[in-house]
Each structure stands twice: as structure tokens, then as C-alpha cells.
Image (cartoon, rainbow, N blue to C red; front, side, top):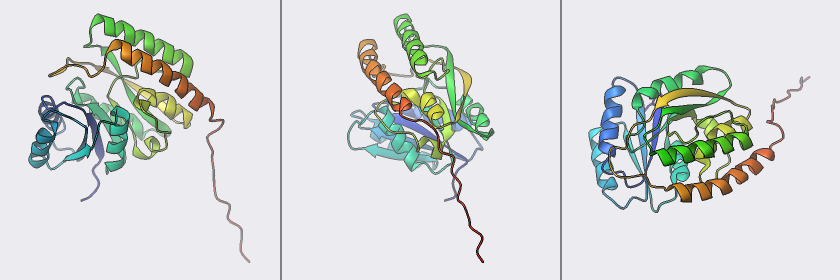
Length: 243
């Protein structure tokens, strides 16, 4: 099979009630496009495996990848990117909150030289008021410490070249720091305003307090990691004239 023009990577954990609606909507919005959807089941305990099996049979562009146990969203995204066949990747959440109409606009800036990441920036949140306040505070602290010039890193809609992402140092929760990691590699970051929608089914997999505590530790770790990169090498091979 020839490589598609782009790959959509979805990390899914117990999203069996939402995935069919999500994939059906993507198929409708991107009808006629050459793409694939790589869905990584990150150790689900609901009916996600059965739903994905049915979607893979219905749509030839859906690929069903499974983690033997729950490894976290960053690990699932990395697995999906490694499995993807396209040069350019778009990440989405599997709960229906991300609108697939933004997939093509996210890909457009990647044609510009030096752009290593296009990040969705939510202009309307579907979360409760308390979570919005917590998210705003966390984003402000992160932006202050990492200088990543990004208002909102928690949005699932992002686009990047596959080879650039695979150069990033991996750590759990790295998906929250992709703009800073792209800048660390000497790449440019672009932003696209997107709208957030309510979940189709179920509830969020994280709480405000636990996410804040883990995020604080990760933030200091990410800052240390970025500080350990002095320069991005610009290398070229020297060829000697042979007699």
C-alpha cells in the first residue's frame, strides 16, 4: 500500500461509546482525501476493542493498534506515530471533543520551511468553570517557565512532521510539552484557533488535583530537559577532492 498523505493518530482509553461517532465524523469531513487513522487502544477495559475491530472492517483506512496494558496518552501517541505511514501526523482525542474540520487547516502551515509543530488553541472550552480556571493557571505557569509562547497545550489537535516528533526525547506526559520540545529542536511553532466540544459519552479520565500534582513535577522536569540542550547541530559532510 502506498503511503497516505497524512495520518491521524488517536490515543484511546475506554472510549468505546465515542469512537464510532468520532471516526464516522472524520470520514464524512475528509471524504475523498488520502489518509489513515491509527487508533491506539491504551489498555481499555470496556468495549473499545470490539468497536475498533468493527471500524477497521468497515473502513480500510482505520488501523487498530493495541497496548497490552495502560501506558498513558504520551506512550499511545508515540506508538501511533511510530506505526503511521504518512510523513505528516495529526493527533486528535477519541472522545469527540476535537472537531475534524480543523484537520486540514492544521496541516497547511507544515508546508512552511522550519515549522515543526502546529498546535490547536481552544477559544471555547467544554470543561466546567473550575477546570477552566485550573487549566488557565497551569498554562500560565508553564508558559512562564518554558517560554513556549503557547496559550493552551492541552488541546488534542496538533500536527507535525513524523520525523520531527520522533526526535523529541520521550517521557510520560510529554504530549503536554510539544511546543517547548519543538522549540528545543530549533523548529518553529504555529497556532490555530479551534473550538472545543462536549464529550460525546462518558467522563474525563483525569481530575483537577491529580493532574495538577503530576503536571507540576513534569513541568520542572521539562524545564531541566530543555535547559540541557545548548545548540541544535547544523551538520554537513565534507567531501575532499580526489586526485
